[in-house]
Image (cartoon, rainbow, N blue to C red; front, top):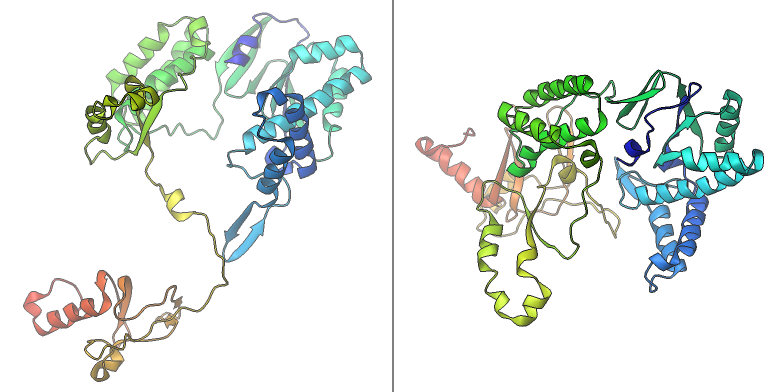
Length: 435
């Protein structure tokens, strides 16, 4: 929205649209550059940071984050020695401050290479969002090339690519077009964009899904001002949302609501909510009763205490739902291992009454730390187990053909084998495929 407000309605004839992008910014920031940038900003804006956080403490904490970023893959452990990991909470702020630090250096270099008026021109026209930069260039082509060389001289590890045009150029999700001396803005989709928006039949809170058509229509209306072009983009949006099973009426209502807003309203960010609101956070699950409803009805009970009433305003508790675990969160997790890996094994429980490993039935249980299957694949045991172990996956091998039956049980292994034996003796009781 800030960039939309910055775009002029008319431009000179010799205008050049220019965008700059840093090559792999996150992974190319050297630690010494990053730490110098953070120290610079902490000391410059010291009043914005609580006094109990000393500068050295902040730098030391950031050093730990940068230098101790480790991950495990295929049995090997790696440590990142340059840059910051993408996806960490600190990465966007860290990269943004590094770029702002280099910008200050860039302004000084421009002033030295050209003059003070040229520097003021760059300060006013230069726009940046993290590592994506844009400028309406009204100087000569040679000056633009010199400016690009200044950017690439700021630090050996930070390199800027450049793209220019005198007709149209995308920046973020906006396509900027030159029409005579006027600027026309259009919404920009990458060629790889498949428009796979959240499906209306997905397991998400209803209010989230019902608000999507309006929010997306509002985005289109904020970017695209020309009425004819706006109608085209809104019809495209309708097709995209219908493909994701959104009800036609919901789409129509969202578009109608967005079109009623003026350009000023569309491009004005909504004010932030009051920070003293207390969210009641719970995992979204449509299969259970809404817990917040029960909490809401019970709030008057603690509110009888004047002390609680001062701490928790009754009307400022809101329902907030977290996403359930997805495949990524289930399959990738933090790994902490304080001791070297040891060999786990399967052993006999030693109970003389055990139906698996007792003296008469010693051959029922295969002991050891691995199992070799018929196809040659080897499975290694990942925990110490015996006949009494519960919540196990087990393998029964036919002694004749060596075919394998894989089963699982929440009961103990000896109890499960007892059930197998029972169903072999009494086939009419059989409820599992193994005989």
